[in-house]
Amino acid sequence: MVVGKKHLTIKDILDEIIEAGEPKQMSGLEKAMHGFSWLNLEAGRNLLALLEKSPEYDIFNQQLQSLGKTAWSTEVKDLADWLVERASRVGSDQAINELNTYIESPKVNVFEVMLLASVYIDDEYQFCNGVKIIKPHQIPNEYLATNIVHNTYNSVLPFPQVQSVLIARYSQEVKHWSNTDSSGKTPLADIPINELEEARLCLALVRSIGRGIHSIGHGTIAPDNLPFKQSVSGWSVSSLKQPRLSPSINIIKMQAADHLLEKLRKLPLSLKNKLMIPIEKLNHYGSGDKGVDTAIDLRICLESIFLSDGNKVQLRYTLSLRAALFLGDTLEKKKEIKKLIRDAYDVTSSAVHTGKLPTNNTDLLPKAAEIARQSIIKLINNGAVDWTEIELQAI
Image 1 (spheres, rainbow, N blue to C red):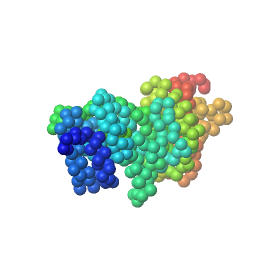
Image 2 (cartoon, rainbow, N blue to C red; image 1 turned 90 degrees about the horizontal axis):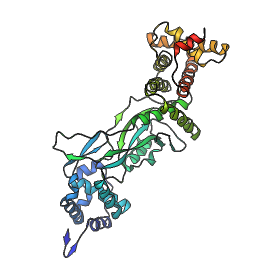
Image 3 (cartoon, rainbow, N blue to C red; image 1 turned 30 degrees about the vertical axis):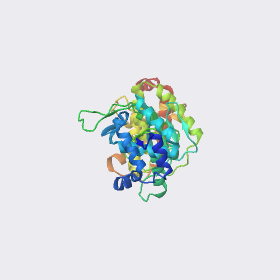
Image 4 (cartoon, one colour; image 1 turned 45 degrees about the vertical axis):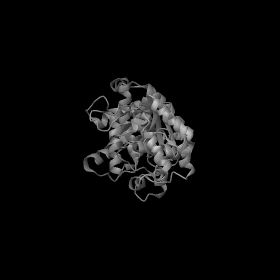
């Protein structure tokens, strides 16, 4: 862009826009309704014209830009808006360098974020699989972080508060293609959803019985230094479980969860996949659902642990016997566990078959859930067991 005899660069124009007091704080809705405020300036129009005639920025001209599992249509004015806002925060030089680095890169680092329902933490922590648990304001995307914090303190809707998130960085291909190309597909990204789930469930295992770790949903975000029109992808929403009121998770609990996670990751894939079912069902038992629903979740959890070999004969007897033999270290302890699981099984049977809890023995359910938790942890630490062999050794 030339004014008089002076050749104006993108940096020159950005500096001029910022000196004029732009950009104004506008929501996405306000931008859609009223347009970008910087376009009211001659410098803003000069910036857009310069970007439009620069071939290196054609990938933003009526192109789809992928993020995670989704893609959004972009225009050059969206790129200009990102440049103006980014330059106002970090300076023109850095904003331009970040844009050019993105254009020249085959891949970029983005993040998968899992929103946790009312989980309070004392401090952030990084697990052995690269997943971090952090507070919302630490999310490397100001737009998402601000909205979470705002909704936490201002929303009147009956949703759990997001006091912490699980987050994992991963690499995805830089991909742009014409928004009229029906054959174009969003590239498959290796999104670390399993890593997030495993960290979440190991955290649930180290909490007291009845206090689960429940996810609201997960999605991909781009950090603020990447030029995305939409820096938050579409969310995959979980089947929401209302949490119970629980104390914060301290560093000792996080370290204990990390130790379990390290063991879990070393298990054969088939065993690990099997264990995810009872762990999640035990986690559901620790939700704020109705007593009947949590009893059914506990029933499924116990059967997933002790009847995983497909044994369908005398379920009540087999389940209670195996639990006793697996965890009991003395004859008296084995008798105690066997009776506890047998009676708890009767309580859950009432929930399954009548939709109601009986009037007695419901106080056994937390104790049975603790047996389930100890059994899962033992399986994680020691590996798979042959239930038939355990039964025969007791003869």
